[in-house]
Amino acid sequence: MTWEFRSEHPKIVDVELYSDTRRGHVWPGNNKVYVLDDYSNRTIRISCRYGEKVCYGAWVRNRNNSYWGVGYNNRNRCRSCCYTCDGGSTKVIVLNQ
Image (cartoon, rainbow, N blue to C red; front, side, top):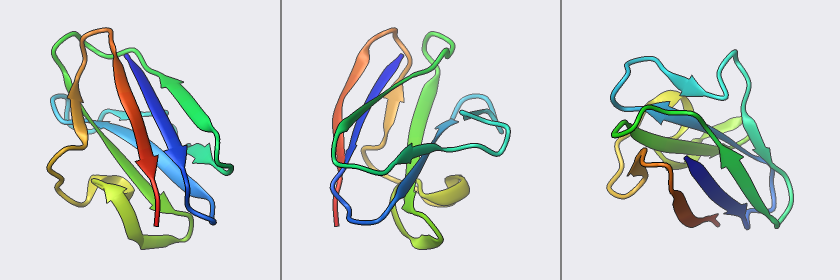
């Protein structure tokens, strides 16, 4: 599955992807994050199980209360931040102020 992100926030934004199907499964994992530190599109490819529901969480670095999707550590709920793993791509997800 391919995810497309672009941050339009002036600060560094960190992103993680969380499985809503397999409890505790996160990308990139191992206490790492994807970093969005410029205004360009960022492509993130993950291996997930077909049909698995995956949600994104993004937050301004060192400010966990400023977030998109499920936010830091999958703490929040969202309406449109989850996608089904089907080998396709998301639209460009724009994170702005």
